[in-house]
Length: 577
Image 1 (spheres, rainbow, N blue to C red):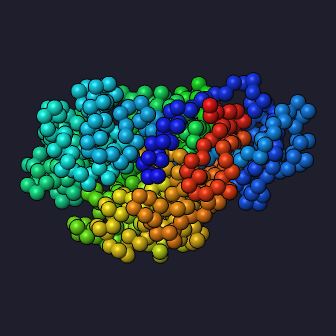
Image 2 (image 1 turned 90 degrees about the vertical axis):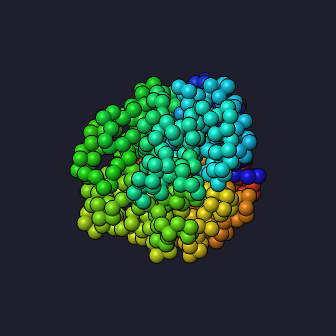
């Protein structure tokens, strides 16, 4: 079964089966309870497995076998026989755009499904007619699989033809870095042949052109800003989006995540943090949220740190919400035709090394200042040059400040040099990996392999090499770029099998290490490993019950695993119908 079909089925299951906030009368929601006769993975390396867990209020008070935990609570405690079922700590996602994902559930969205242009046109007709894709006369569809950008000519032939020629149409790539606009919208935005011809080379590369040097509708990264300026102002209800996100994430067993882009340091107001705060006040925030805001590493570090400290004063007293630091974009994405990921060797078709979005010296200074202020730095780095420069920045901070023990993070790491593998452990930098992407399909083969040097391509998503070099691997999804379902990600990480075969089997991850990646390791990325991430006395009672024993099933069965219930701080917040 293809990755896109698996994701679509996962989403369909969520929409059909979700049930939240179980009734208070069930024994599982009693204040004191012992779950026994279970197969429990604790994620505590000193005692990885247990048979029973005692919970009082929102905390775990004892774990082990039944005889060891039965006296930890009063005789009023509910005794719940789990009949040998599998229990895990709540999953933790170290890179999840929850509010944007929740908003995507409310609008026209293909959720990264690989569809033909004909099927895309049919969907466009549907969401035009039902209004879910229309905003002030603009047709906007989210979640376009980036493989679609290999068919620019077909997009132009379809969405510039009669019926569409006088309608502004925007397709947003699921990667968050790319879009396609039809000719009507390009003209409206002033993106013309003359406009592109006058751009400097470093900016021109963000716009796709046809053989006549006219724009072909494809735009990447900062090139999107010009088009965004004329799009209708869409008033997003972030609270409603957050509520939908909580339902979806809880249905996938996720009880904590790092939101890597909660506004920016230069915003006068932060609507996303306000939404999380409102969700918390109404007891709808059924996950632990660690937030970072987008910063400019080339800008004034002191000013941005001061702004971040103000956000912390405003929001860090909110239950289950903490603002911890900054998100930095070191580069873009690697796939053709975007090719803005920063590589040490040039793209074979263009001779460009991509777009390194930070000045290395200024980045070093920014990271050092943030680290000294006890603030987390979470870096988007896809190309190997971006990964190396990010590590150099953290090395500079460690050299000046000493080891602050702040778990700075590099996320994505699609290509990395072997010489950098050991540096993660040496510098105490975590690797936040979206291994649902690490499979043989069009996004890793067709639109990558022909365009980069073979000596770089061989190190694509080098998860096992990082693991063996001592790096801490943290589970992550980048939802809504792709599904947040950890079981699909674990399957892909373990098999690396896609429609076009296996993507370097030597980099396959052991299942047990993926379970640690989605629990205690990811908790470290959130700086919450003392409170969550493993089932231990004194930690939050965040647990999930699964419909199968994931330690004995095949990889194929793993991807079909379902969460039967999710417990957050001792209460059931999702239950499968």
